Image 1 (cartoon, rainbow, N blue to C red):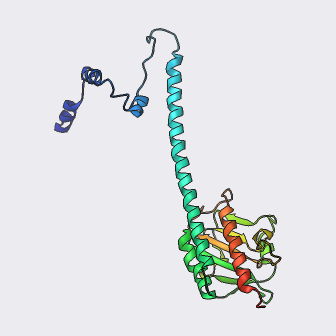
Image 2 (cartoon, rainbow, N blue to C red):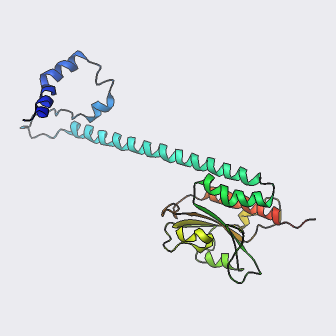
Image 3 (cartoon, one colour):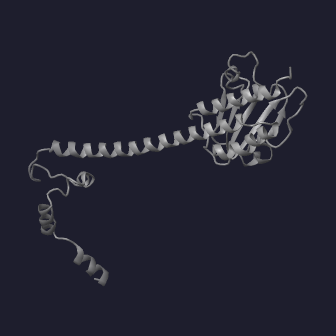
Length: 247
């Protein structure tokens, strides 16, 4: 036996020493319920007695249930914190957009600031243009596409407001120069009636807000879309104001 093994053996407590310690500290386990749950309860019957100890089995089952509940509570807390963080990011992005005072500010906030605030890798604004026969890149992050492009992209789900792609192997050309790196994205319609300005007959522009990420599974079809819908609606309202004819 090595010196280390000998030292470890010398540090081990005997059963009698453990028993003596617990008897001298009657509140030791009561103050440490996690430790108590980890211990194996004694059976009420001897090993030779062919009687099933249902109490012991129930205690074991309850212990496992408590462990599952503990893991579930941790997951719920993490999910709640994640949801709160996404809400805060969305509110910050919205405030930045409505504070934009010039077209240059609007463009900077949308293309440069929103990716950082929303913790995504790319934002693109896709607008249908009757004069565009093929997709045409404008200022950074803005793409003009032929009329009917949005309907074609949403043809498989015509009632959808948002399309979520979990993994896109070939990238997404809608994001321009960064499109080759995009592996997951969300395409949010701007021309849906839900994006029209309340109390106004002025419809939002026909186009999409595209939100992209370099990591697969950043977006997925089961994901909640209420915050993305809110940003798309806000963007449509702001765009309709910028594009409104001067009286």
